[in-house]
Each structure stands twice: as structure tokens, then as C-alpha cells.
Amino acid sequence: MKIVKTIAEVRAQVKEWRAQGLTVGLVPTMGYLHEGHASLIDASHRDNDRTVVSDFVNPMQFGPTEDLESYPRDIDHDAALVEAHGGDLIFNPEPSEMYHEGFSSFVDMTVLTQELCGLSRPVHFRGVCTVVSKLFNIVKPDRAYFGKKDAQQLAVIRHMVDDLNMDIEIIGCPIVRESDGLAKSSRNTYLNEAERKAALVLSQAVFLGANMVRNGEKDCSVILDAMKAHISAEPLAKIDYVKMVDCATMQQIPELDRPALCAIAVYIGKTRLIDNFFTEDV
Ligand code: PAF
Image (tube, rainbow, N blue to C red; front, side, top):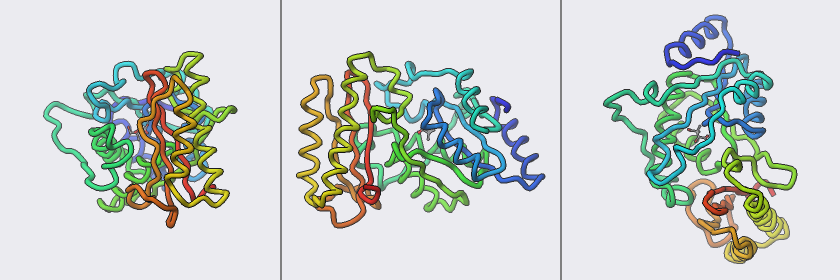
């Protein structure tokens, strides 16, 4: 398993693999890897001959008041995890390698990004689409792997790949949870003991909503009100959004008459966490 810092090194390695007729999977990450990322690497290792993991905290997808500086980083830990799960190459560039002086081209999507996280994080998806496009151009993978925890991101990436005719198969992988239900996230490390306990309201609300759907509830406001009431009972929790949206458009819907995504974002103290369920999966 190799760690490289430059685009030229990634390209040289991928070229060598291609010359041997090997397939390549890409797992884009911002590092500080956990079992959620491990499941993406496992899936890529299963489907492809070689797996590249990008490990890059992308400044472009953070707003001015967000956690870019404090975002956790640990390349040694990441390298051990990637190696243990069969990854072959980590691409760990400096920001200057990805964004040279004068960088001025962006991938900006006008649909799907106006709701949910796009509302509270206005620059986020432009940064995600731009960096993921760059990673696709650098690695030229056959397949790329994204977690369903970032459900809107997954929908945005699929849409971008379709819009821009990128010849890459996008694979969405299930949410991985702690044993008590909390969705795995690098940001969970920000939580103190009391916040870690309080953070359980996210998965509890998701399970509550999914259960109501399973039992036949079709009125979105009934489901969302029950979820909001559960979260609001926790003093350390502050709701950013709890919404039901059409899977295809990411627009809010009043009734479950089509495949939907129920997505939530909640501040636990200063830490913003997300979770979700797809009505098709319940
Ligand atoms: O999901 C993430 O970790 C990031 O948004 C991604 C896709 C690696 C782009 O920086």
C-alpha cells in the first residue's frame, strides 16, 4: 500500500495498472477513516482489482464559519485502515496540489442542491462537485463509492455523472452505525460524553420515523412532527432540518406517494450531525 501526494504519482500508478488490464475503484474521503469508510473500501476491493482512497480535507466545501481548521486528521491511522481493508493507494494531496494559484473552474449544480444541507451550507455542494470531478479526472476509476449517510451528496454525484457524461459507475453503500445506533462519522469525535449520549436522538428519530412508515403512515407531517418532538426533548439538540423529500428531486413532499428520503441534520452542542432513511429501505 502506497501513500502519494501528487497528481502525477497517482496518474503514473493508475497508468501502470491499466497497462496490465486491471480495473480501478475510487473511495473519495476526507480522512480520519472509520468503519463507514472501511465498508466503502471493502466494497471497492470486492468489485475492482485495485482501490485508490483519496484522503483530502477539501477546503472548498467548507463555509467560512465551519470546521475546516478543526476537522480531524490522522494519516497514519488512515494508512493502517486502508491497508487492512485491501486498499492499494492513498492519494493525500496538499490543498495547493488540488487548487493551484489562479484556480477558477467550478462544477456548480442548480438542482438537488437547493434543499436540505444545501440550504444551511450554501457553498458545500459546489465544493463537493468540483473536488469529486477533479478526483474522477485524476484517477479515472471504473467505479466510485459513496456512503448513503450523505444521501443528498450521493444523489448530487449521481446527477453530476449523468449530466456531464462521466463514464464511472457510482455505488452507494449502506450507513454503518455504532452498536447503539449512532451513524459513524468523523465528526463524532467532537462530542464530549454528555453530547455523545445526546447524539443518540438522531438515530432514535430515524428509527421512529422508519417504523411509522413501515406501519403504513403516509402523511409526512405526522411522521416529521413525531421525529421533531423526539429530538426537541433532548436539551443539547438543536434541529437544523427534519424533512421528507422526493428521492429524485430532493424537493419536500406532503405525502408518501413516491420513493422518498427522510433526512435530518441536528446540532448537538456545536457539532452538526446528519442521518436519514430511504422509505424504499424500510
Ligand atoms: O463525503 C466526503 O467525505 C466528502 O464530501 C468527499 C466526497 C470526499 C468530497 O470531499
